[in-house]
Image (tube, rainbow, N blue to C red; front, side, top):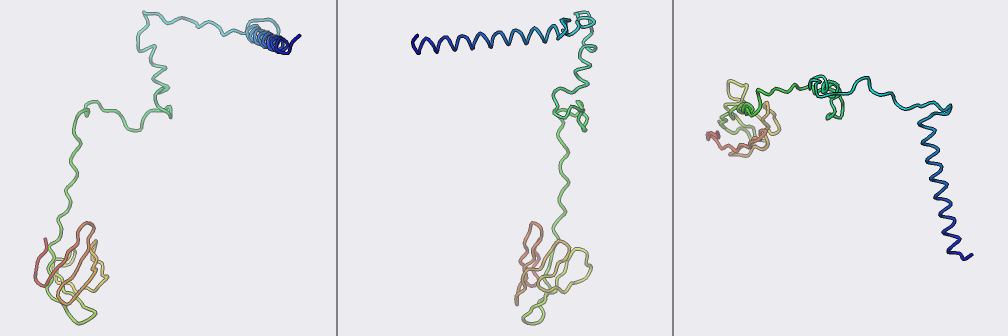
Length: 162
């Protein structure tokens, strides 16, 4: 026999053995080792058209099939709010109106500020002082630079910066 024919015979025999093993395994799974049928029992009753939709769908809804965590969302769905615009965000508080009353001393300079939030009278500040959310960044002989959360004030003597 040629090598090619010998290869075809071996592959054919292997295929037959695999097919026989699959058929034998399926028969053992259906009939069980003692020959009795292990097939799943038929459902007690089949779903018919006369069943209500709620009775059929209730078990599906209970398992939340479309959620990965398989339990209801912590936020309840409210269809009455569908299409309603969310409330506008609260307005930002107005920026304080700061006024530089004067510059004192020589290097290092000190500044006299009016309109500082939380202070009724004029306030004497140095470089690096923090007044609530405002920080004094620089003081020169005729101006001061104050940095807030979203604003930078550059004030000259007796000039208001809104």
